[in-house]
Length: 288
Image (cartoon, rainbow, N blue to C red; front, side, top):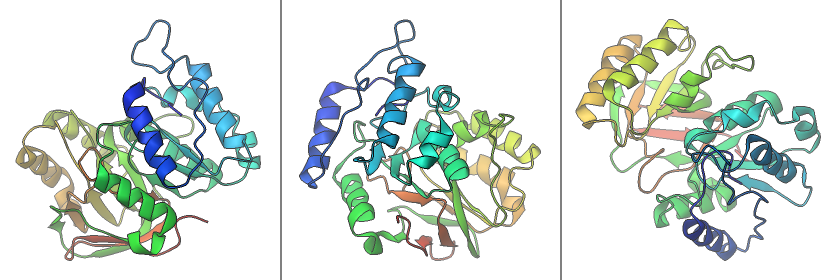
């Protein structure tokens, strides 16, 4: 389903073919290829996108709800969902990233579920490596518990253990002050990434989170990709200036977010971040 932006039919067909090659039966949301009548950046009306999500989650034949793409618009469907009905439907696998961060937050807090921050199947970054890691996470989870990216580096020494939270920085920040705002639990390992945000905007968002007390209790930080956010050293300087003084174990470029070979990372799962080793290891079964 598409909770946010409109979907490219060609990329969708390619992504569905990948899922079917894993012997999955794919159901396509009724409005997956829809367009909002006035707002071209939305995949159909808010009501239609919410209905697709509600219908998929409450269908007893559906075991996983997978986002086709991100963009913008996920927050607009949150208040249109019947959360008591979603809870009664039982647990499902949820996969998505970027704008889907708001759905990860809501599903984790309201339904107490572990969700998967992973690639969009109709996205340009659903490459062979991203496909392989998502498949391993779904079907061979023991092989996908130790996570490290091709360019991971230590930013703050030490080891932290806690529940993984976070996702896209812009979505986390834009959720501040909402009625269903859910700060991280004590000891959480925070994952952060973003795309096409200038360094000063990254600064502004991190500063807002710091002033809101959002980092209180965070035990470690894993940073993903920052594609289109300026030169990497500029982004690193901003993050180091704002977060370095917290003294937390922290790693750069763990390999999740808007990057080739995007890793699938469970949110809401117990994990250990070893900043010196540059690894995040999931220590519990992410999917029931």
